[in-house]
Image (cartoon, rainbow, N blue to C red):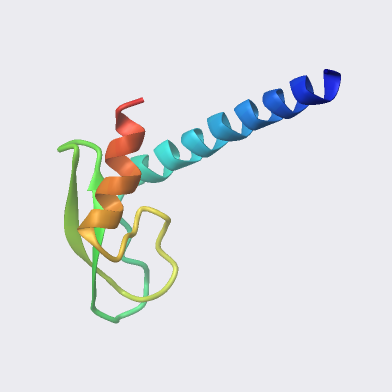
Length: 82
């Protein structure tokens, strides 16, 4: 019984941690990075509450950087509903 309770608590803590990390990612400002490439990417704009296109340079930047608007929406709008 104690083992089941421990597993349940650990699972709950993991879910909370993952949710918090995703929200933090979506709160980051867009960051094209210092490189000079031109890659079409999407970031979540916390002011407008929408995923917007930007040009990513190809290196560094931050985690608020998605290859498709669908990926951005799936990650950030779900996090916003919590």
